[in-house]
Amino acid sequence: MTPSRLAINQITTKSWSLEQAIVGYARAGVHGIGVWRDKLQQCGIGRARSLLRDAQAWVPSLCKAGDLAAMRAHGASAALDDCRRACDEAAEIGAPTVVFVCGGIGGASSLADARTQVAELLLQAAEYAAKAGVTLGIEPFHPMHAAERGCINTLRQAHALRQQVGPSAKVVFDVFHCWWDPDVMTYTAAPYTQETATVQLCDWRVPTRHPVTDRAMVGDGVADIAAMVRQFEANGYTGPYEIEIFSEDWWAVDPAQVVATCIDRYRQVTASAALAH
Amino acid sequence: MTPSRLAINQITTKSWSLEQAIVGYARAGVHGIGVWRDKLQQCGIGRARSLLRDAQAWVPSLCKAGDLAAMRAHGASAALDDCRRACDEAAEIGAPTVVFVCGGIGGASSLADARTQVAELLLQAAEYAAKAGVTLGIEPFHPMHAAERGCINTLRQAHALRQQVGPSAKVVFDVFHCWWDPDVMTYTAAPYTQETATVQLCDWRVPTRHPVTDRAMVGDGVADIAAMVRQFEANGYTGPYEIEIFSEDWWAVDPAQVVATCIDRYRQVTASAALAH
Picture (cartoon, each protein chain N blue to C red):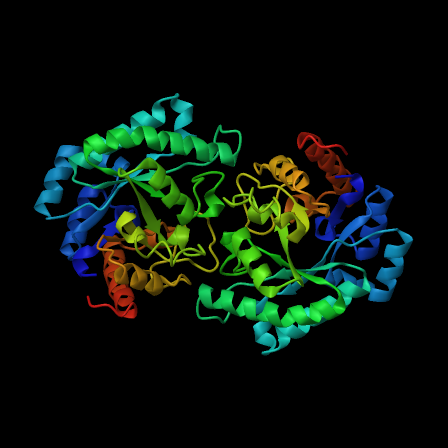
């Protein structure tokens, strides 16, 4: 768990453009950056590539594709088409993983039906992902988001889906969504460490005042992050740790200070996980 | 699933005293009433017994005991003492089940630690419950409540804990807490139907504007209640259906109208579960 494995997801510094984030993170010594497609589009893919290269930056994940509930409004094949574009974009900026957000119930007849439809979309998208040389990172979402944002809600569900989809799928582990999961120690151990595309870090604030935009900075909440990181490291996880904070509070702070705090907290969690930097 | 199996949990008509609720429900033809301990205390146990008898009412559950996180502030044995009192009170009003609310992290070092402590409390309380002739109904709480209200979050966890505790424990199935659970069809089937103390009905509102007090009336949300009821009924569940709506919206409505709505929605869910009244 070297500092070189630390990435910051750019939503954490929402007010920064992609260019500002690439430059700002690199200035602080962080060369990993989780990229969002809307920011990538604003920047332009060619320009993003050269900015990333100049900053010697790497991209753990491109967010996001999937979201069947939202895409259905745009036609039957909209979600699949969007998945394909996301795979191409990820390949172009060297991101190994497209974060696959499952979406809620939307127009499906029930939660069970929505879950079936997500599996179908993933199976279709997997073929294209394989050709593009990228992985679909299935992200289980906190159960409070089951109806509206993500109908796959546990690590067990996500890994079962990954297995069904095959080698083009992995799982995105996000502390916010998974910290409560009774199987968290199972799915942070072998063989699942190898099937985890990226580990997204934040913390669970008490109280959580908003279901989406009130995540805590790493170390400021009640999630036992050190236990999860320790388990991942002891079981052969060698992938990125990506700090991702959706937070109105942190979005109001100077992004350079947010980046400095992320680095500091990453070091603390590494230390409390009793692991070498 | 006869109307005689319908109960209303008195929190649904929060502005009514226990006396008002017993009389008001019976007037509408509902003789099942889920009782809260604070309301019971205001009424007095002796008086409650005679009111229940006069109204030919039955009590599916007495809410609540447990809540280790909150009780710990009152001393080491406070939670256990409170469990014992709840068992006695339940026995006195003929309620077969004390709803056991697990509580959040509180003073525990982590969520995992809190879960261990809940199991210890349940094992201690079970002996007393057996003597009192009542059951501890372990209620899994929605994962968004893991930190603050209930650290047991899935049906699988709750049934594993029940099995560990023995015959004095059952599980309380609450649609609000469990509707998203990937194992919901498993735990509404045999052999778990016999291990379910009561089924609490409400619905999941989209969006849910408050984690505690924004439940939807049965039929107004996205939970597939008919599927759950159908599964329970097809698998030998013979216990109560208890409508329990924590809702600022419904608390603002005339309680007599709320009761009428509950009855109406119960009939609708029974019909859509394709079962005889």
